[in-house]
Image 1 (cartoon, rainbow, N blue to C red):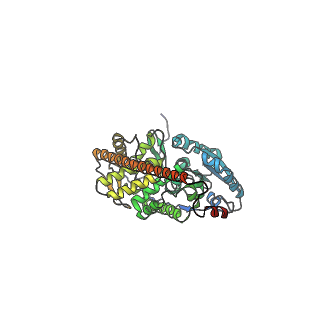
Image 2 (image 1 turned 45 degrees about the vertical axis):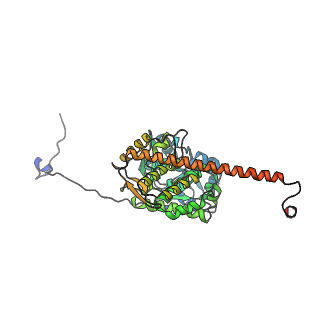
Length: 439
């Protein structure tokens, strides 16, 4: 066997070349600062508003490129306005339409987004990905951006309520895998999240309730004043009032966003696993993926919160009065508090999975009074069963109360109709004719 011999430097023996015990050792330490902005902006698509253009890297008098990944439903509603805006600012948009429902939150869709990056030939640092849509789209695009070339910059434009106050303002990304929600994911901050309440005008009432669940969550674990504000605004928060963003709605949104960011910022990488923002997220992931017909994220969270309210009450952390207030608030916003899939067996299975996710402990956040939280690590299966029974009993009583009120209202309306029929023709109440003439 032939080869080239390598000469050894003078003075070194074969024995001297070997590391002596305990061997060689290097320590590597690095820090990666994270800084991103969350901005509430009115009129984001107004051609005279430069905010989105600058977020894309344009707006400096020269053409610029961006990959725009947009929810299919949002594309149907807003494509013309987005396209006109980008044309006005000389931004060359490459469009990628994606599905925004939970069934599409899988690896295949994330890979399609990375393929769009490849086809565009996106520059690794100078060009941006713009994610437009609800929480599913923001999670998928964020995950794809974190994977492609180990990270390309992206901007979030959330267009749903849950996106604007929850999914669009943190650093987590994720996709579902198997029967597990967000099992694959990363921590990858956007450069910017742009929140324009105007987009909320085109969501439906169910998606309003979907987002309100996350706002109720923040009120229960962190902000009693927000809870009272929500009690005062039940029945008044609609797509139109959200888009108008008057003083009460503006305070609801800003308190929810501020509270969420206040909880996230000190613990972006979840080094501390006791997280109050996990409230309503212990049992709900299992329910969300198994419910048929499907539940929205906030609907599953609401059912989880009801169980946690019962657990808190049964443990003496929450008074009967406040438990009643909280359950009524959830129902008042059109959210469910129970579901047939939510059996004791499913709760036990979901809790066991949460224990793995939370590094061997339950770490279940429970309300301790309204506006604060305590963590439980010793929930027993029997407690879960009693909590289910409590919610079922409360719901039955509330349903009976509502049915009684409805029957009483119908009876009163019938009596008024009978009285009206008894009035002789032309014998209206005093002033009726004059009032009609004035109109």
